[in-house]
Length: 111
Image (cartoon, rainbow, N blue to C red; front, top):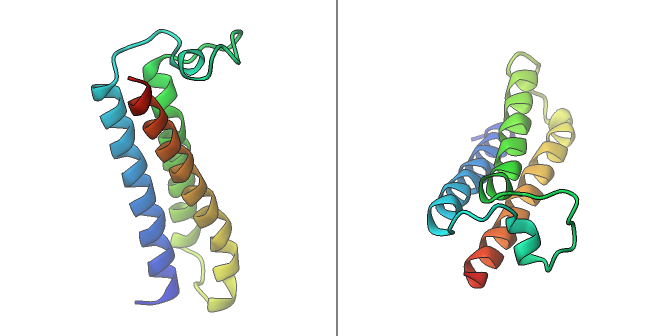
């Protein structure tokens, strides 16, 4: 397996993990009209986030990121020097997964 396959597998795996946490959060946590302010003590009252929006925002961003990565790299020449260009989507995908883990963990511990 070359480095391109490893990066693609990591992006897809982190996206799948984030989607699974979103589905788990939406099924395990009761629906709250403003879950964000419920968890973070009313720190953002002007922009409420329901349970669905709270758990779905980062997986949606990851799906868009993974799609853009796969479309742009599908037809391009895959040289090892261009792997540096693949690191930004990989780092963003991992960051989104870490944020989703903390949101999931915080919501589960609150309820």
